[in-house]
Structure formats: C-alpha cells, structure tokens
Length: 359
Image: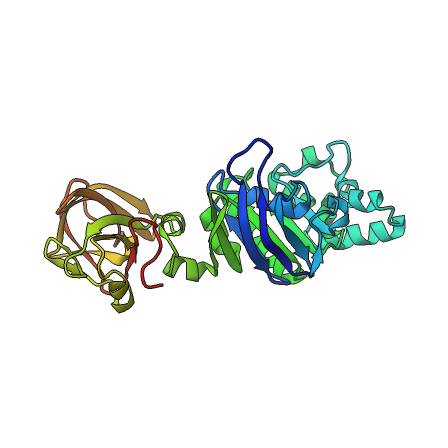
C-alpha cells in the first residue's frame, strides 16, 4: 500500500494554451479507492497518465510514499495500470498473459507460476488459464487484465475506464467485483471513469474534475448532499439536480407565492445578491395540492422509481423540472400538476462563480 500525492501538478501540452491538468493538489490515502470522474476533456485520464509516467508533468510534483516520482520512468514507479482495451496478447494463453510482466522482470519461473495461480484463484480464472483471449467473455478478459496487474504486487493500481467496453449488466457485476477485490487486497487504487453512477458506487472518495481542474473531492455522500459548485451539482446525481436562476426578494426565494427555504447559512450568504442559482434534487420536489403550476411532459418509469419531467411556470418564464414521483401513482403525460419544494432540501449557488452559498 502507498500514499499518492499530486503536489500542485500541472500539464500543458506543447503548443497548447490551456493546461490539460491545472494545479492538481490531491492526496490519495494508503489503501484507498479514489475515483476520478468528469466529462470528456476534464483531465481525469491525463492526471492518471501523469501518475503512471505516461505524460510529462509540466509543473509541480507527484509523490508515491513521499518519494518524488515525477521524473522516473513508468517501469520504475512500482504502479500497475489496467487499460480500457485490456491490452492482452492474443497469441498467449491466460496464464502467459498474466505472467508477462513477471517474465519481463526476470522473475524465476517457479515464482511466476505461484503468483499466477494465486491471482487466478482470486479472480476465479483457474479453469481458464490455458485459454486464449478470443475464447473468453468481456468480463473474463477484464479479469485477466487485472490479474496481470495483481501479480506485480505493485504499490498502487491505476485503472483507466476498465469497464467501458462491457455491456450494462456486466458493468454492474464487474464494478462490484473490483470493489470487493480492492477491499480484500487493500492496494491503493486510482480509478478513472466518466460514469458518475460508477464513481458513486465504487469510490471511498470521489474527485470531480472539470476543465482540467479539481472541482471537489469527498465521499459520495458529501458530493451528493453538499456540492461545492454548480458543476458538481449538475454532474453528480442521476437524474441531475434541477438548477434555476431565480430572483431574491428581501433575501428570500419566492416563486409564485411559494417561499423556498434556503437555510440560515445560505440565506445569510445570499444577503445583498439580486439573484441566485437554486438547486433542487428530483426528490426535493413533490406533487402537492398547491404550489408551482406545471405540465407533465414525460414520465420515465424505472421500476421502483419514476421521474416526471415537468414544464414549470415561474415568474420569469417556464423552466423544466425533474421530479421523483410515486411509480404506482405517477401523473399522466400532459397532466396539470402543482409542485412544491420540500423544506430544508434546497441548495443555493452564486450566479457569477457558481460557488455554493453558505458552505
């Protein structure tokens, strides 16, 4: 196990004006599963490649167990990377694929065989050691790629969207297996994904990146309950948080006669502002007998959950709101309804910077 530290690390590609990763200051605790998540172009994979030594750090440093590895070659960093495309050798069987890094390191044959057997048992690949990648399912190939990382017994695992090539059902299964495996091995792991559901279900902590910058890091619950800005608020959560720019009236948000409780801290921070970005999770809005008039445009049935997408009539014009509803008593499309925010569940952000008010 190892602690990993990005010490104000930046990367600017040759000829580029903007940093692909800007001043990343982040510590991954020993034994932690840290997930980097963000949209395409957010810098998450670039940060991982900087850690692996596959991209050159322009400024700052990267440390593994307090050792500065910024200028070390990838092979000298004692980290193992699992790639999106598995990167298996098609002409080698499973045993040889798993053993390949040990062979390159000239580990004695008996030791190689022992470590391959141990990894195969952990990954339930013992019955497939003599098969070639073409004879395996997608999930089995991913296990082989992980086995190749495990046998190296590295200080850290680096995983770059390892499940993106799998179908939806297998992705759910494999993310549970990876989380369980990481817990059993206790190896520090940095995992990159664009899928926020994957990030929230797997990470001990999650680092949200956008535009090459670290927007927020915290536990999944901390990110969901207290997004630091509108970027995190819009990215974390499925469906996404409703974000509405609304006027303040004497420090309060009043919509069609309905006062939205911002909480004392946020209300105090909003004093003097003309308007705020109001954030409401779908579960923070309910159908009511009175409130904000709206028309149901679409109802999404998801088994135990259902979401109504409504066109809501607000003082400054119509806005779309997504509302979680009772799946057994969901409204019909085009039905007229009344919506009311639940007390104490609203978020407020500055309109100029997007930063959370009262955090």
